[in-house]
Length: 88
Image (cartoon, rainbow, N blue to C red; front, side):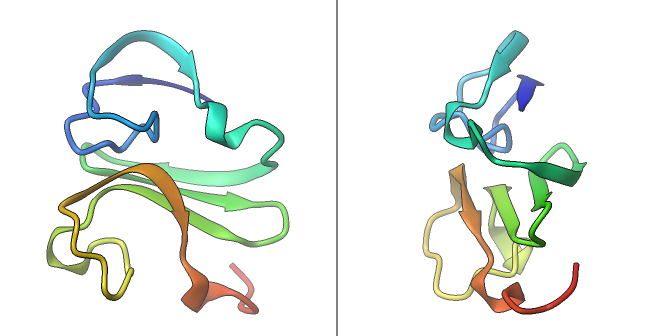
């Protein structure tokens, strides 16, 4: 998957919060079969062909559905384990 943008909240999943003006490959997702995605100014949600849901970006106010996450931003994609076994 290739991304570019402001990346203030780590929503591009590069492992940092540095902006990127030209498309850059998200190394963490090499070999990850992206079926669908949703992106905003604060976060990105990916769905794999198996139905796994992965998120990156701002976690404020429970935006990502990740319980127990204390970090303000996730700059790498994390799986939402609560969605495992559910059709997405």
